[in-house]
Image (tube, rainbow, N blue to C red; front, side):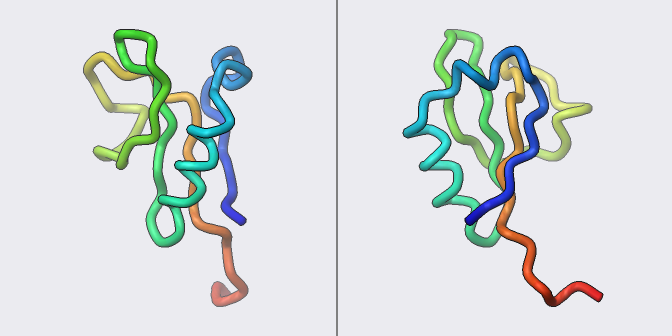
Length: 73
């Protein structure tokens, strides 16, 4: 199971379950973001860097990362 960090609490309830499932599947090794495009579509996208400095017509809703394993000290 992946871990989800919600970045926009107001938009999170609008994320379709299939987009969450797609993001969780894609985030097996690398983080994936859930974002709303300028046209209103909510999609899973590869991260371009950091949502704090990203520009363009995306509103970042959540970061979906791989489940943290016990390999970190």
